[in-house]
Image 1 (cartoon, rainbow over the protein chains, first blue to last red):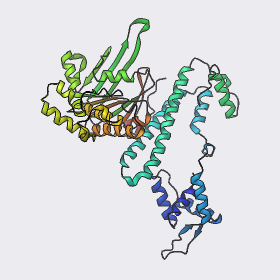
Image 2: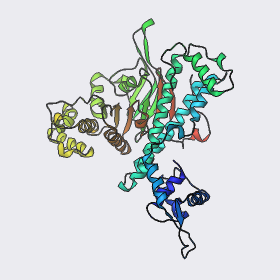
Image 3: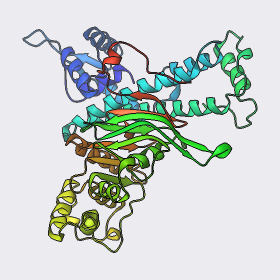
Image 4: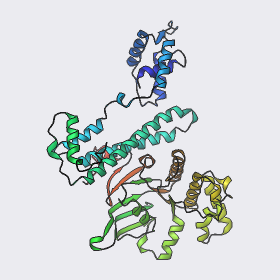
Length: 205
Length: 242
């Protein structure tokens, strides 16, 4: 998601000025997505340019509130109605790191997996502690955000477990020689062929 | 004093070439108020560890100590008494007796221990209260949902003064909300002073623990606890055995 749509959603509740938007954005995401005020104002400027919000007269305190326009509402409705595409998410650095670890001589892949799993497990414990404290019905939005992170972290641990068992199963197969291509995709494919070539089922993803 | 201590514990099944080494030199302690999760692939020794901790199985080498008693030094009858009085078990198979009500199921371990009927009833109701099921005390297992039955099994594991609670995949067939409620109950019991050990393959459930131990091939390969441990402040990596 973008900050843009987050701000539009907050403005749908009523007009707001910059500091209010920042505070409410961080409250909704439980502080897991900090925004600086500069980001809020540049995003508002872009939204205004695109006709999605409009500024209102300044208040006595010198604050300039913004309100959402009809075009903004259409954009927001579309955003809620459209599923997030996998391709819109940032590249998975961890997967790339493991692929590189597997094909770089002298790297202990087991320890890369284990160090990552310990770290992810700690994060998961931390989210769970936060969740245990968010029992109030008013905390539902925050708890759902937390749970999304919980499930993502869990998926990562499961994937790391899977990597570990794959490594154990293919430990007998030599890996190294294929890692010469400079292109990462080529490297990953090559290493998969080297490491998992004997398995018609293909490599783990 | 720790509630549970494993000292360089080995468990080998069979002999010679066909021997299976279920545990190989496991050392761990669980203090009162501490909740430890044990994770690891199938066959890594998780359930063996739990069975040894609860005195259901004996180590080939090393000691299992529960509240200061070395289990291997106890006579069979002493061991059985310790299991009934000090240790609570929650398994994926609930093992509730279908012909007994919820309250009777919960009271059973105490009755087997020779406690007076009236007292067992009071303690059973208190344990059912703790899991929020006191209203269903007179129901039979088949008159309850899966989640309710699991809570009865937990009440049975907690009834009386059990300081060590052992759970093996206690959320097995439950949906995510009900499973989470089970973990909250275990967590609350531990926060009230018990020691808890949870075997699970679900990281999401293990995350309720204070410490997570990973087993592979019968050995502890790493442990993740909260970040404020002194060894973490020194910036050291967890000990890793390839």
